[in-house]
Length: 232
Image (cartoon, rainbow, N blue to C red; front, top):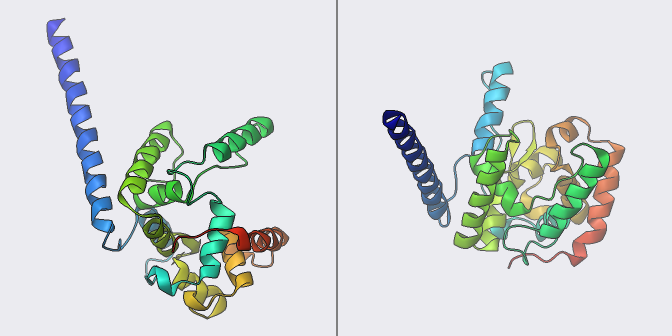
C-alpha cells in the first residue's frame, strides 16, 4: 500500500511539474510577444495541416501590419461585433457570458458565445479547436496573462493580424487584399463591417459572400461602429 501511495504521489507531483513548466512556456511566449510579433499561431498551424491534406503546396496568406496601418474602421467594426466592452473589462465580459449561457440553455445547444477579443486571442495563439473543460480552463489562464502583460492596443494589434478570414487567409492585410484588392489601411466602413461580420465563420463566408445573413450582420455592425471605443 505504501508503494502505491508513493507512486501516486510521485505521479501527481510530476503532473503538476509538467503543468507548471507548460504555464512557464506560455508566459515566456507572451512576454516575448509584448515587443515581438508572433510568426504563427496554434490555430494557424492546425488549419494549414488541414489545408495541406487536400493541397500539399498550400501556403498561408498573411502579412503583418502594425496597428497604425490598419483602418480605424476595422478596429471599430471588430470591437462592435466581437467585444463592445473591450476597453473596460479585464479579459472577461461576465454579462455576455451569462447571456450566452442563458441562450444556449434555452436552445439546448451552443448558439451563442461570450468570448472577448482577449479570450479569442488566447485560444488562437496557443490552443486547439476542441471544446473540453481543460481547454476552457487553460484559455482563462492565458487570457489573464495577456491582460496583465499586454496593453489593450497590443492585444487588438495581434488579434487583427492572426485571426482567420477565409481558407488560408489570416490577418487584416491578407483579408483586405483577398476580398477587396486593397490594403488594411484603406478599408472603408462598409468593407470593415463586412469583414468583422465574417469572423465567426470565415471559411463558410469566404465561399458564400452573398449570404443574406452576412449582409444582415454587416448592417448591424455598421450601425454600432460609431459608438465603438478603440485603443489609441
